[in-house]
Length: 199
Image (cartoon, rainbow, N blue to C red; front, side, top):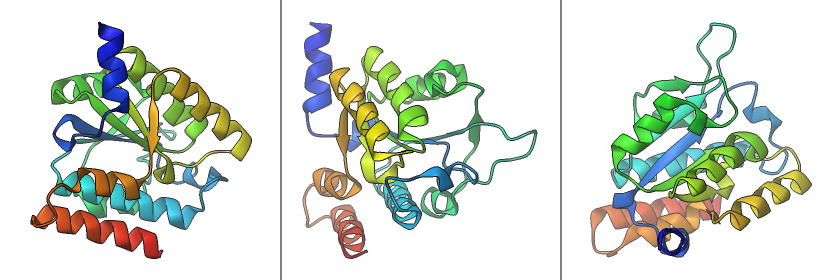
């Protein structure tokens, strides 16, 4: 029964009232490693995902790895789109092994996690696998992620999908959660969709 519910969650449409965004290692010194998604495109997509989170009231958790006791320089698009936030620092590749990140996700009551980060093979893949194993719906927001190579990113996505996770683009997400196009937030989502489509 649990497996059936998990399968339904992974393949159902995303409900913004049941979703949260997990930004991972989107910091200077790491984002530049992206080889599968140009950095300017990655930055626009991260900003667009943050805007969607704000518009639809989706909680956002930002996690990073520490850099020799100095504050990590996160992509400015995160703050520009969601406002002030606290970085949850961790000492593991898998953010689900960090009790603070795990507790924040559990406390939100949300069961769908939208993952964005660099590198897809590590910072994104490992928590996606852990989230799926814990019964969450894990969706890799592919244009808001960057891989180290096309080959290794493909292997990571294959493994996530085999474990029950899914992938989605920011454009698809915006259209999927927009709802009634007569509502202001739906119109804002469509504006974000067109901004990305034109970029």
